[in-house]
Amino acid sequence: MSSSTSRPVHYTGLIDRYRDRLPVSDTTPTVSLNEGDTPLIQLINLPQQMGIDVDIYVKYEGLNPTASFKDRGMTMAVSKAAEQGAKAIVCASTGNTSAAAAAYAARAGMTAFVLIPEGKIPMGKLAQAIAHGAVVLQIKGNFDDGMRLVKEVAGEAPVAIVNSINPYRLQGQKTAAFEIVEALGRAPDYHCIPVGNAGNISGYWIGFSEACGHNTASCTLCNGQCPYLDKPLTDKRPVMVGYQADGAAPFLRDCPVTAPETLATAIRIGNPQSWDLAHAAVNESGGWFDEVSDDELLATQALLARGEGVFCEPASAVSLCGALRDVKSGKIPAGSLITCTLTGHGLKDPDIAVRGQEAVQTVNAELSAVKAAILAHI
Ligand code: AN7
Image 1 (tube, rainbow, N blue to C red):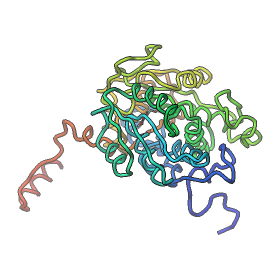
Image 2 (image 1 turned 120 degrees about the vertical axis):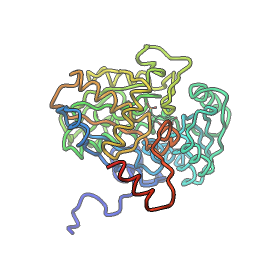
Image 3 (image 1 turned 180 degrees about the horizontal axis):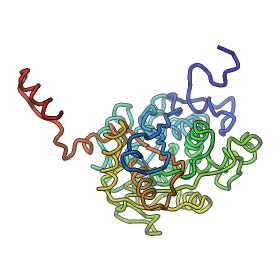
Image 4 (image 1 turned 135 degrees about the vertical axis):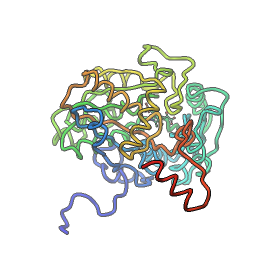
């Protein structure tokens, strides 16, 4: 093989991959679990079954090291915390941020303190935080209460906040947009994404903007330095569409929601911290926010798992759910190239996946019983 291949043989994570586009220096310690470089999978069965004429790809972020997109932001936030000498990190979380914080803290030899809403964290995510040795503080309140407490406690104790109000988080998360543009050789026409605390939609907008050489106000750290300013990857940005669960949809209500409720617990958030950045992404791109019901998002999760072999968690299905509805209504026109972020893996929340399913049959350990059971389905 030629020595001029652009990628190292051993992929070592997004900081190494995009070093010149991130606010790191040669002296920044890299705390990585080889996150990023996730598959962009074209849906082949669903569009055909539904008779819709669009190219839809899903960015399967569930294949990151802790099985969600949070790893992209966490490698940056923890590396910068290490550079600044932090010994401990803290976050509020609906589950995935706590899993990523716990893992990256373990990698860095730091202590992670995670504040989670009591009884509202799926088993997979709780297991991760415990397995990686985080100090888990279950609070008698929701994510928004936890977020407020994290901001308060960071002023009183030596802990670095690694929620997405930490700007390094969005810098890491923007790299998913770079990967999409590289994989497609162009920007998509529409990018559809679930919105909870609104960090990810803001990170993607920074990434798509930098990829085409735009210098956005939201890109505070790379202003004027990003190599894409001179050598854009593409000449356009996608329309950004943010979808929420209808019981936790502050962007649709145009104000915080005090008691958010949805089975998609990852996005059970009423007071998004990146409110202005997310509005800017949608407004500058000519996009919109919309909401889907729990029944709709669960149906889409099942449709994708059964129809394409891709298993995402309930909150992740919100993006595809909204996109398919907007394609059917014509709001997203025929012929469009659409990308949807699938933010987390379905195994994060196994209880939801098996809920109400009668897919498991018990049969006698005899050939006749097994044969009869098989033939009943053919
Ligand atoms: C699977 O873990 O906020 O709009 O504390 O886990 O950037 O908040 C999770 C968010 C979408 C929403 N999908 O992203 C947390 C947390 C999944 C998520 C979102 C989350 P943002």
